[in-house]
Image 1 (cartoon, rainbow, N blue to C red):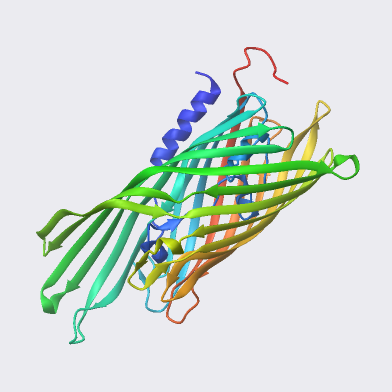
Image 2: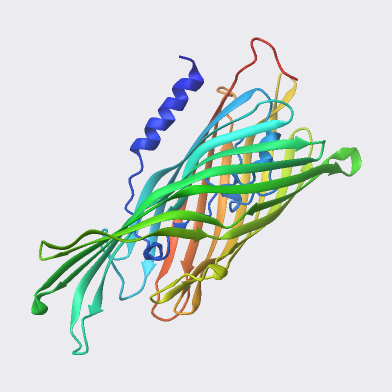
Length: 425
């Protein structure tokens, strides 16, 4: 068994075994959980900015058109993992996970493979999270007009996964188009435990929501060189995803003091819409033999408002995300050939999220820094480490503010394949 097959099997085993979490984010109680906006790849250190980003040796799924930038005949495998440490600020908030205002987790987030099949076609396939629901906290719940309250625990787990197959096609020397077909699937479980001794009530309500369906994304990139000796590069990118429907099956179970009142009753079986999404990005770079500097900026929007989703105390609204970053790549000579050896990244983002709580939008902002190394002693391996710090909340009196630090690690392995002893130029 060759090295690339052994590494692929190892990554699959790690992905299956390492999805342990105990992060308790109260914001994931709404909708279908926290929709993941992180790219989980090399662009994390640049605020996940990458709609116009192109790399010949990294899998960039921010835009499927980027797969045409991969070096032909190279087979790539990447695995990403993320650790997160969060604190919550609100006097009335109690976290059931451990300390009253602290939680953390470690999760394998992404597994992907990619190759450029020929001069015009590159593809990637993999699995990554689409949304996550993971919260656990307690609160006092009013029982009636007499002013009695019951201690109530709220717990939610699960998420929606995205298994994708993306393709990029080069049209001429300056334009690439791409599309990604995905299968979204997963289950969300929400439990509410209400204990009121004076009313002899001990109710456990469990709601299970199962979701699945296909999803499509489209992308384009235009790229060119300009300036003296063509040392400057410009890339423009665009992405689009039409409104899609997820098949949803909703069921309910209720126990009162251990006795079953409702047993897995089917509440609904219909479709849940996910919004139309589009984005645009720009990348400007200056390239020399031994160094490359790239400046990037992105804008992304999700059209939630037309879907009309609301609930108790919240509504879903249009979201807007702005991000920007910079990357400096340093090269070294191997047999008189410049090879990418180390790169440094900085970035930041602001996200007016799709959640509106009590009429006020939940906002998120963050900054990131990253470093990547391709060891000269083991040139087929690459490592990227990115650190993010951010905060989230709607900044209204009495609401919860979440501050977090995230460490994302990406491991990259490549090998030459399908050559039959011949080098493809």
